[in-house]
Image 1 (cartoon, rainbow, N blue to C red):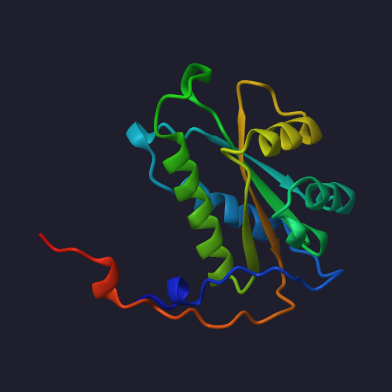
Image 2 (tube, rainbow, N blue to C red; image 1 turned 60 degrees about the horizontal axis):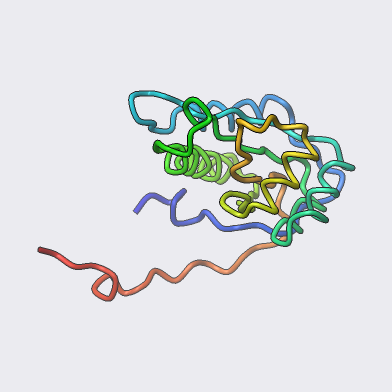
Length: 167
């Protein structure tokens, strides 16, 4: 198994006052852009936040976003549904982009934590208002990024037989 996949863990506490350079944030966005999407539709945009006040506000608004309090940055993935429609594969595509960011962060020895927004209407509305996101665009998730100040326990791989069915 790939060590990056095996070592990826959700980091909820980051070292304060340790910045993540723009070049590294750009590298994370490049990883997201390499995610698969139906017909190469790429129904996403990325909002990179390095402003501490906004990061704290996200932590206050979203019940699962406490990691933003200590994060050096966050990447907000926003979905661009075709014609503003709820049809299509944008949830899967944005999820794949998020996973690429998380894996790339692990490879770069950065900590990361996926904080869900979509499909919770109250969370979507909160991020939409805070970041001035237009109504035809859907805030999908917030990914806190920084230098880890904790070492999460290694993940125990479940018994494959208990979750797999071969036909």
